[in-house]
Image (cartoon, rainbow, N blue to C red; front, side, top):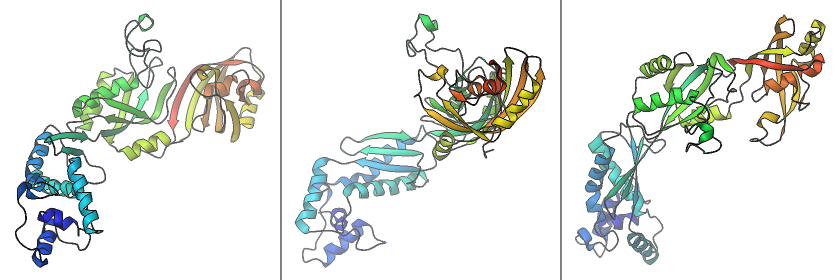
Length: 390
């Protein structure tokens, strides 16, 4: 065995030494002392450790297209070498061992730290090298770039995310006029590609804290979102310039504020958030209404739970469940004949349109039921998202 492979048999016996140093000590005090095998004379690694610097050079070249401040190394070792090592453990009865893959990753990492001038990162590395030691190949796993912001939507004709055609699923067909999608644009398409271009990435995912209906405006403090850029070549991008470009190019349909770097943990928090929302709803009743009945809306709904079955309008794509939500506050803002404007604060996930018209009894109680007059929602705006973020 070479000193690396000999020392690995005693890897956990002491600290502060490399396996090669441990092997040299064992060889010196052993009755079988003498020079260590060279190159491919080692029965275990067959000279693999003499190639550490070569693997580091290959990894360094593979890293050049990508801006990164840290890295991690993984390796793929010939199965015959792995089996020879495991047989050595059995033959010697060694229990204080370390795998050759672990030592190889560490030694290449040390060489790369020296040549690149940046540290190894075990938690969330910007770049992961997978080195195939049999064929001298290096593949790179590039961590996504996450960018947080808040958007406001001023159009009632665009959805939050890209909406593929239900018939062709993006291929193009008569139903979508060959576009492959149901709407010409979306919030995602007005924001994501600009972030990707600045980061020189290969695509993106759009993560929003919930979503509003296509025909609803998103106003007030805006809805939190994170753009996840795949395989970015640049990480230190000018987010003020990105924000300005998005707002200029959206031509009034959307604007964004507060762009900053984010993380996968924040994406998880946004997806799991259950922040209350405040809505301004314009409702038209079928007949003139008794103003006293409108006051009953506040009394019956404010700070009270409601039960909602999955609305008819989304039943084709969501399970038919009963949900209990709380209406936190209700205010009758204006009344003009058959038209009323109602401001509602409610739990996340409340179906506000159904809270107004009742959805054929699937939401109880509802404004229409309380007033005793059928109604329809003519406009719906989200005017505040009650999260604690900035």
